[in-house]
Length: 349
Ligand code: NCD
Image: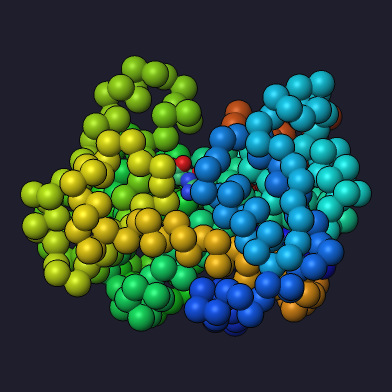
């Protein structure tokens, strides 16, 4: 059995096979109408979602399966103090596969360690969002015909934006991809992303970056992750893509956004053919069909979530880690380079 907690849980050949299946499903969805007959997906959403939850549910339903779950923490036993591990254990009694979103970093890993069925990370705090990345990659393939050699601008909240973290990791699989990280100083990528990109540079100025880009990936400033509301107010209008800025972009460039947008893309951009974000959202359904099928068909070779070299004597100091919110949590540190990282949230320990 395999889970999907981080995009790098997939090897390059596994990722390629999944994307190929996603392309096929996007072109001939009806051919897969009975692929999930009798299967049940549990969607455990402790945090708001529109696209991710609905596209997971749509994916399961359109392949003949069924769905159950909750869309806010207040309607689950989390309000009674149940841990994510126990909630996942319970869901695994009632469903064949789980998609889980949680506001705490590392929550999906903690849940997966307790789950007897495949568990998919549908977003864990400001940490990772691998299925959005699968959506993004399928969109790049469909819109640009390939990913190698693209120059991709990532703009906005690179610190808390979990979609960009997972996307950067995935782009490491491709050749010659150039990354331009466009953010205010205060919202630069977190330290643990340091070695993930091979060819990138950082800038604060969107206009200067635009002419060279094949793809502009806009993101929302993640209000819910800020400790200080005044800091959010200061940064919330950092970048607004409008028609005047679109004029600086190449005619064959595309604009992506995981959505929801707030004000970082003016609605006047929507009618520009290069605005691909609604097509991107639609791709989320097809790639999630492919993912459910791949995880439930046993197509992936089984692999343990943690290696044998885990240490329990290095507690995680990240206050946003799931361990900080779980009474009696067992800390797990995994070796990384010269040091150690929390197995759940990846921060250095
Ligand atoms: C993103 C998320 O939840 O991280 N949304 C999504 O899943 N499409 C982006 C965001 O909320 O800004």
